[in-house]
Image (cartoon, rainbow, N blue to C red; front, side):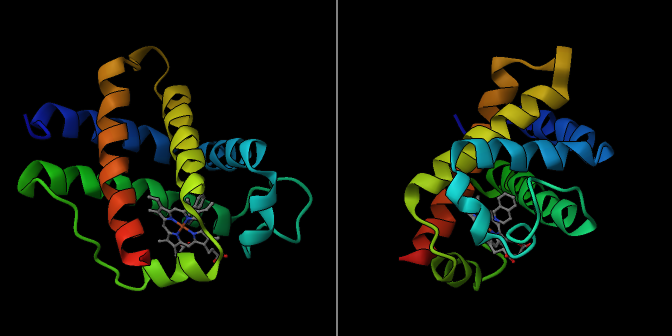
Length: 146
Ligand code: HEM
Ligand code: ISQ
């Protein structure tokens, strides 16, 4: 079965919750850096700060990643596949030294953040919807990197 209306609605509603609290972006980065401390130097907006400092830049970047996963859910629901709107994304990630295992780290951090954000509304079904949408997007980015 393809990506359902219900899955898309689950992703949309938790994305709205994510956006409401700037602390969620900080949480997302913190989890990424716990799992992959060396990634800190890859991000222009993190490499010179001690720890993860909240900033408008950090929020904008994290919000973009979550927003793109949400968009990927919408694409999966309507067309069954994910097409990147930005064809420079592959090159950006190659240039920054991103490799496949990083995508697993970001996925785990994203799912953990969504779990935190959703509180009592979290479910396996919600988790799975985000996972499928992320995987579709990550596959498209990795394809544009190769
Ligand atoms: C840059 C999205 C995965 C590291 C970017 C940009 C976008 C983006 C839109 C360019 C502009 C911006 O940062 O706002 C995504 C999405 C991903 C993904 C949607 C997964 C589905 C990864 C992974 C890593 C990574 C796995 C490695 C940990 C970076 C870095 C930059 C970047 C280091 C440059 C940031 C800077 O210093 O300006 N990504 N990315 N990305 N991405 Fe990703
Ligand atoms: C990956 N690419 C771009 C921005 C990001 C922000 C936070 C975590 C991962 C990211």
